[in-house]
Image (cartoon, rainbow over all chains, first blue to last red; front, side, top):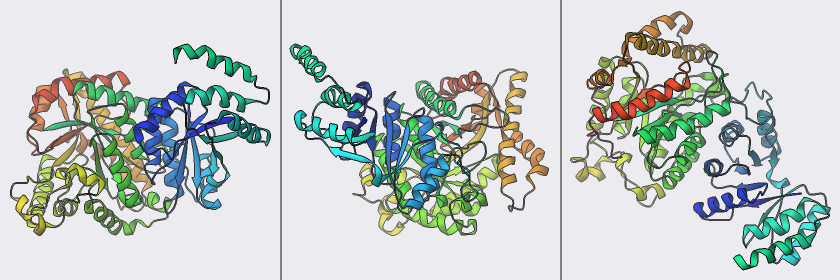
Length: 197
Length: 346
């Protein structure tokens, strides 16, 4: 299971950007951003420019917008970010399918998406299908939460996290990766870091 | 007069196929270079569902260029407003300007390809109503300096009445440009010289202090000192010294209109035979192009009474090295030769 950082509740743009840069450096899988329609994709673009590897999950509340508009913005983001876009689509099943089919290269209602995205297939996930949890910051209980999601078959989990991202990456992203994480490694890494903190 | 560069369309054309990802990464590099050499602004252009990937989403593209720069202004020349939900465009524009120090300019146009309207579930015959509805939304609380792309006197007057900047596209002769500018200024004057959004207080972005564009009576005390709304002019332009270089540049200008022939060909009910008229269009474009040394180009631009010239250099044929070189020359040679006394405040 891979962990992504949900930044949608972080109010300040510069804080979101700072957290995304740290998450990128620490190897987290993705950040999740949202916002008022039209600003979510520009937010993701700003993060894309300041990061190198992290995936950019963008929550689109499609509302009255045309699915083609959303697909076009995802395609442009995918080129600007060099294949790191991921669309979380909040809309009817029909709308989600419309966006997904356009991004997959299908001609929908006589329209082909131009340009196509950089990825062979941009992941398009319905907003109500993503797994997310607010982690407490208490490592003991958060380990159990992570274990429960991982062992329950979750593959990608978005989290909010109240402490340093290093703790999240060291103790929980590692633990999420597989069922046999040797906890002693993370604990000893904390000890090694202690004199420097 | 300010000098910008355009139009970045992010295409992979039949004449010069390339990777789309490379096109978008080149945009970022070009924005950095333009800023470094002192160019005022970089302008993007939009179409939808066109085979060469002509950029369909200008706001994220603009966000990219703004993210990699600190002083360069970035504009849309133009965003096709009837094809977008204006509330969405307005919100995103306000957000971009808040985030990037008011460096974003929103240029808006109507669009002319029926297929683009159909793709968004719209009817092109409704475009004037959609445009006006969109402009009403934008001018009620202007989120940025606003420009309207025009090709006719009617459209120029529409922009002038609202106190909006004029963005003159294409290859019009100096005489036609003069006519459009005159129509724009006269309409602005007749409407009571409304203050334009480019002079709106920064607070207006948040909606805290809505300016009075379109309400000449309320704004009357300020109007007598307010200059007319700015005029921007897109011009085919290249800096070249030898006769061979000039011929090469003019050939690039001519060939770039193949893209427009394709766009027109796709617009099957415009009443214009683009294939038959391509040579005539190219001749017209060549005649209006400003190509030569920095002194010659500066002299050629001096005949236009405009505030901003957007050098149309985003052709698909020149090698990257030539494009980079002309950006550099525009910044280092042309910008210093032109007065900065235009009405643009930035």
